[in-house]
Image (cartoon, rainbow over all chains, first blue to last red):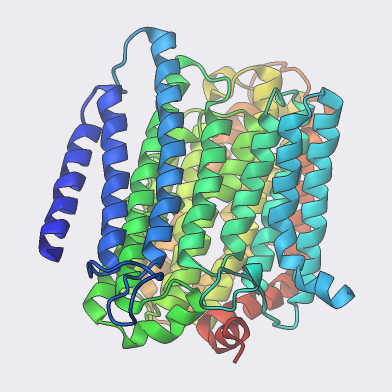
Length: 105
Length: 486
């Protein structure tokens, strides 16, 4: 199970970077949010995939570590804010030029 | 009561600018904005000075947020290194703000963004928890995105997009590192990590450490992750650029100093960091020689100078780290000073391209003097602070028998002087009758020039402080004991 999730993270990172390296602004933004989701999943993996519930209703042996879930929650909020900012910036660039191509320097 | 107030002091450099920022969003009158912005910056600076005075004897002041004892809660820690960094951040925050107001560049929400940025930077310095450091980084970065893109043109918006993207990728590496370190050790509290890392599986820890190196290295702009910096720092107006150029990369440098000494100790000169430091110094200064505007030359010099700081860290000796911290503090003052001089030129001449400038020394004598002091200090000419910073690093390098990096650092100093002379001979000498910059635009840079002179004349005072700071990094026992209440 852990190996499968690790593979999933690998695919997400690869896809994220592929989209990020493209020229379309929207694709770059989607790529960036895929990268941040990949980071969230790897934090989940770091806790170990026990399949139990955290804290309430769990025995001492089967409890899932609740801290990574708190970390992910924080990371999701941050990546939500940054993605919103990126979309606003992208919209502004669209207003400026009417084209949504990224910088091709 | 007073004891409890003192115990809460490390929180103030974060809370004061945060409160000011929230009030600034609500209260839109121009006069209130300026007064409140300045009040926030001055109060933060006062708290920072108090922190440095309190930690002078080597005291480590932890604050357990919400009363949850470490390692379960989030810990804020003020030791000498954190206190010094908070002091310099608050100082540059104040000076940059004075310049921004003088230049009339403080439109809507700039004051609020500025205070959020200051809060994020101070937070990153004061936190004692790896994930909390990530949150602080994001607070700082989102504020910096805002200040960078505020009132930009199309071309600048594109450059800014690149800056946001590169920082998001670095943040992803940061989270990967955090996850790996947590899975290996089961803790994110830095003091607790000092105890746990030696017991954890070495492979996972090393992978996590490398992820964190990439994350911090990108923000610090070390080789090979520095390519984004000259594009991004060419965008904002002078005051904001001084705050960015002085402080933002240095938060990355600080994190490297904090994490790669106590959490992942190298136990001796680190070959990877030494190579990176040499390459950063060399490529930064070579890039600067090829540029033709003041702003871009100074941006490339930020990269080159970060190399010196990493050199101190890589040597990993008490004097090397103390020299590295000394260099960070000196560099922030001098580099912000130079960028503010460049900003004053830009504001009055409407350009900073060297081929369109000339004769500034004839009409702007004070500005020329300030530039010369800062430039000579940057190159490491005595009696300014840069000379002592470089002296310490070169001595540490010779003691560790790392002659290669010492040779590079000396050559790069000469090249630094060359490109400063290039600015001086083309912009300050030569033909032309440029407009005079107002006193209000020159004063912030002049204040920083006075600081570099003062530090140069009384270098032993600052050295004893950075030496205390380095002591906590080379022997973390006291830091760990204070945080974990042993």
